[in-house]
Length: 119
Length: 110
Image (tube, rainbow over all chains, first blue to last red; front, side, top):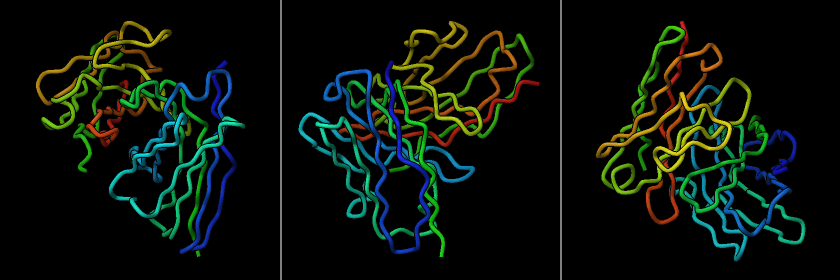
C-alpha cells in the first residue's frame, strides 16, 4: 500500500534550520510529485512548494523563497524539506503529500511532522 | 499569493445538505479545472474528497459532490452524517506549478 512516512518531531531555536524527511513506498517514486504543506496551530493549510522526483525540479511559494529547499534521493525514495532562518511563525505541522500531476490533487499524505520553534 | 476564500463555518442537521463555497480569481479557480477538496479531522492529515472539480476518489461516498462556476467552486455534502463534522479545505492549481489553499471551513453537524 502507498505510504509516506515522515521523520519525527523537532524543536529548534530561532535562527536555526530544520530538515524533514518523507519516505515513500508502495508506488513508483518518480511517477508522482511531492508537495509540502504546513499548518500552524489552529490555522489553515499553507502550500510551501513542490518537487518533481524525476529530475529534482522544484517550485516554491514566493513567501518562502530563499529559506526553503526541497531535495530528493531516488535511491531511498525519500524527499527532504529544509527550512532555514526559523522564527516562531514557522511553528507548524509539516506534511508531505503526493500528486500525480502537480495540480493540487494530493491523494496520499504523510502523517505530519511537528516543528516547534522556541527560545 | 492570497488564499482562496471560504466561509469560516457552516452547519446542518443529520440528513440535510450543506454547501461550502471557495472563491478565487481568474488566475486560479477560474482558470483551471483543478480544484480539490480535503476533509480534516482533528490531529489527522487531510483526506482528498474531490479532485478535478467534481471527481471522487475511490472510497469517498457519493454524498460528496463538487462543482464550479466562474471563479467559485463548491463542495456539497448531502445526507449529512455525524462523521462528516470536520474541517474542509479547498485547493486550486494557480499556474506555474503553484497551488493555493482556502482558509478552511468548519462543518458542524447539529
